[in-house]
Length: 136
Ligand code: HEC
Image (cartoon, rainbow, N blue to C red):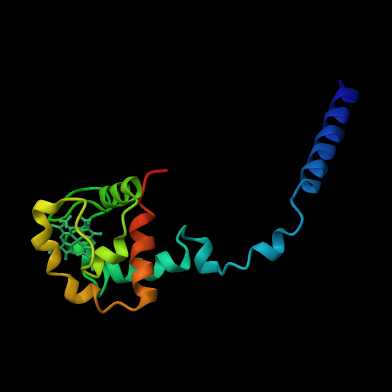
């Protein structure tokens, strides 16, 4: 029995060591993430978008993550834009037709005075943020 235990211990030690060796090389160079980024799954662009969506863009008052309120849910918008390969940037600039809920377009249109003044970075962020809700 004692012999068996010693063997077991020796084996698990060996197993541990083996595990360590399998860690991919070059992992360090890849992880230049700051502490803040590792606690969230968002890319930096999505973060910019999230801030605008829930802040000065005021989008959140009509768009919730997965529940329709005044506007369609963010998840629904993302799914339809992914399925139809829609151009959300063009839509938010007032240059493309609505593809999610054209019957309510007039309500959404009132926001173009905000979205038209987004910088390119802000626009990309908002689009990336919305598209991060698309189903896998
Ligand atoms: C006053 C309520 C309201 C606010 C605020 C609002 N939306 Fe909307 N949004 C809607 C409604 C209603 C629709 C459905 C009509 C439509 O599809 O165009 C919609 C649709 C959309 C769509 C889909 C458009 C399509 O192709 O049909 C996108 C993308 C969108 N909103 C993004 C945004 C963003 C980004 C903001 C913030 C800058 C925002 N919305 C703020 C009400 C709102």
